Length: 166
Image 1 (cartoon, rainbow, N blue to C red):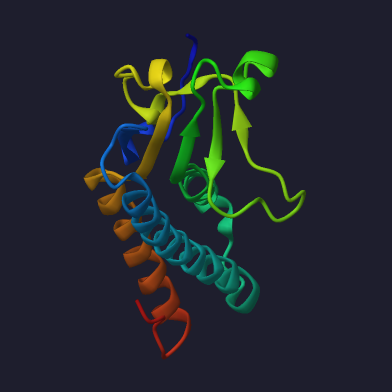
Image 2: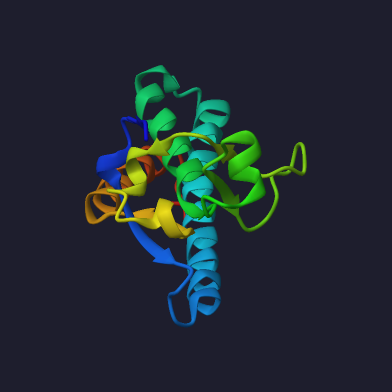
């Protein structure tokens, strides 16, 4: 199986749940809720960044890499369904995974892929039995995003008397 390398894998952590995992859907639903909260926090930081650019004339060009990383991290965290090898979708289209949870807003379709993503972790046999991969922030991802948030907060406070709530 081919693995797609990304530049964001150091900031992410994955957990694999085979279909045989006890209490799988309760666990998955808990992860989906926590991941949505994390996405909202990342969106809040991004909105603050963009607000600074508009309101205070801060040039965001020097932050381009960090903004791009935040978008990529936000879009990567989530729960991914890994199709069983005998599943029709995998057999007919060679689709390996799909995003789990709310459908994408624009097309009302799920995100899908044929390649194993490096931030899914090592394939510990889940592609042989099917299941789910939960991708969340790693400890270094939390530190990375917190450092960005601190920078945004200090920028915000230097342009405004009020700081953004965390």
